[in-house]
Image (cartoon, rainbow, N blue to C red):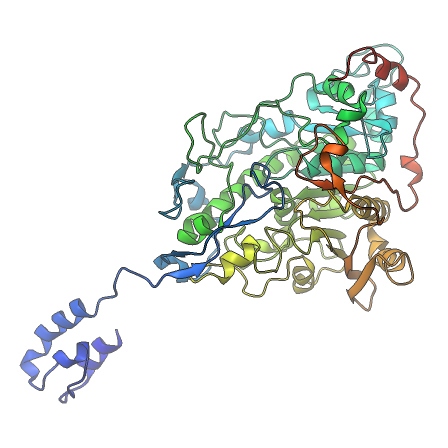
Length: 577
């Protein structure tokens, strides 16, 4: 374009030079023909300079299906990838209505034999098409609710005390109180008064497994009802699916009647054992592939950046539409609860962080947001900087926030081997060049007034309950008990004047924002998961010792459940296997 302007504007002769302009001579009558030759000879070449980068091979945003296991990052040999032309374009947000109306074609690097290009179908904008997530939601209840509804506890925390209940929505609605048996109050009245509040929890990309169930169990142990929309509950849309476990309450009770299969440590309690969600991007022929079951692979992402930016926006759009239906159909016992929290981990943490609904935001003022395993910053998981903003940039500035993430997180950490860093540092990649690996910078940028960010040290895992579970338990207990004052309490309890588990990195003058590097509560050595539970992920090393730090809220103090021993004895005579 610059050369063309020079030809058109200059009335004098051109000097003879090397390259394309050498074709231009002094005779004016030759200018127009030479212009055509110039444009043809100087056209940009299709080939772009390759970028050398690390190909990080991990599966799913939660890393659950990889052979290497959660948090294990496999660095393959360095490979060169051709940088597509769109990689250098502006980072527009790719989440407008037109972005979801058509089939999205997503590519992978040509030399990646493990993967193949795949299509994501158009998405309906009617949230009623996503009602399955709420209708098949998981429910976790504290002891008081179980007693009031006539449900027998079937889950418990890592201390082995089985005092809470878990099942699907339909299981709760089959409770004696719900079907009208004598001696029970109206179930809505029971649920309105038996909790300290409610948590809407968004699971990660692998479904309600691994750390998801442990976080939720901790919250139920602290007296909170937990509602978990199941994004894998229906294959009708063809986006993702896992077959549900049959008779979930009884299955959990059976597991927890045996020390070897205590459900707290199990990698999967809620889906059929042989059920998986094979990604459409994975080369396999044995089963149907689902487009929104995916591997987060840096090489694939960098090879087709625009398509992958659109892809991750479709992942969020799915979770957004599922949540829109939940919020617009919230039962009164949640809508009018004393405290309401929106929580999530990994993919669900991203969704809980970004999600905004005008009917939900006022409810969160009494509780807050809990963002686990997500960094709230522009990286491969969002299409543009604006889409990393908490509450879509419209969050109430005084709503409390708790963010916890490992400083070595294999997906979102600021270190060189994380996927976020690999993608942002590659030629033609996208995302912030100087990542922080946590939500504190976003909190400050948005001027959010009340936030606590814990960077957990000495754990290489994506999930935070594997070997830092005691710290997570203490942090969740303190935050849900007193969300408005938690930043001050975090400094007092975990800082140098408290138990010293955290080094204070930054604290606001108001005391309402706290950021610290923190370590696990308890110094015991981690042990192989197989020594703890037969159904734990075998490649984990667990910190199995249980510590409960902090004071329970009055509303969460345990109630003696008379029939719990009788229920366990129902399976006592069956042989161990």
